[in-house]
Image (cartoon, rainbow, N blue to C red; front, side):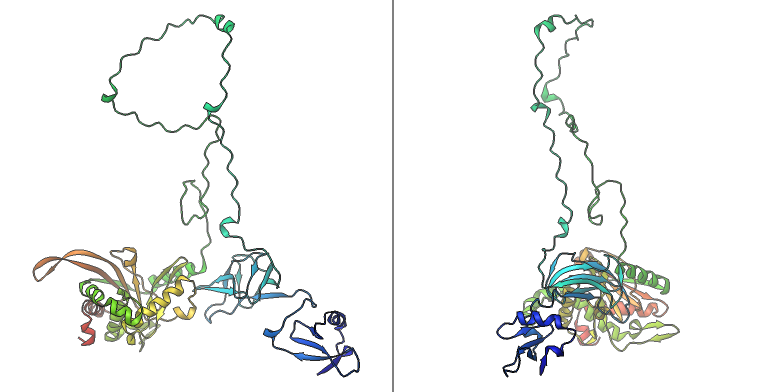
Length: 469
């Protein structure tokens, strides 16, 4: 394709710089065009326009500094907005795919990566503002070099403490009074004090109580400062700190209150002897790790037992929708996971067909995502039954709250040795209390108790699942 200067009307200002920046017979434009002089001997003003791949293109600064505008990405279908939390400031250098900010939505935090390398030139929205998909967030000067991002802890340098005054002992002693002044001193009118009464020996007296330290003369009084993070410490300053609740915490609060207002919740309890499952883990842990590359925990046993019990009691897997009852022909188990930003419940899909190893791998993968704040909305959508394991924090007993729109939730607790009766004899066994909270509008007490006893039998003796007992 041939083009002359007259072809690029409106771009004549580029012609001169392009000719001056010819390199090996070519002038490079940052938009993917290469202007190459022709060798037909007609004119020096004629160029051949070549299209080249962008990843093979080395741009010049002929067109000036390029500024990229980063926009808010699209959310899931059920989310329309979120609150922005900046990770970068103006002047910080960023690289490609480096996180610029996080947008907190009702269900998860969406990281916004940089599409180019450069320097943050301008933040178009304030920290904590509500943004919607497509909104312009910031501008980045492409290819520029800026300062390294300052650590958050060192954002405001602490003032240097004032030098403490020297102790009184270090002060210069006053000069002794002259002898003439001592001779002219008046005679005291008060009688001398009586001689001291002899005290008991030191061995027979109790040690004196320690005196509180007194501040040195002229020292400034101690002033307590409010804690930098009121969620982690209390300094005793009798001050209050008001912090805006993040969107995830607001959603959790509204959903829990909705569950209490909507469901007729009732909780039934049982206890599980963990001796057999602990012995099973001990005897087969090495072979399990060698075969599947992951350790066997208690959660896989309870998820497998719950999925088995749900297939035996489909009503516990159902939910009320208006005046209808929706029966689900699948078992998706939500596993409650505590994160610094709140409680999340990622879902194991089709748990009824998963093995112990599949469950452990699925839980481990979801745990890594939750720890790295990488859970997507799709990871938490749905779910027909929830398991909450408070035992990892040492819980002995508790009543979980239903996770809407589900109808039941299983609460696991800590394993503690307790005396129990076996065959008429008192023995010590590792025991765990379990609780099942269910919607009494849909699930009757007989079904709930039978369901929980099925879980108890499947955990204590997995052979009941194999033999469908």
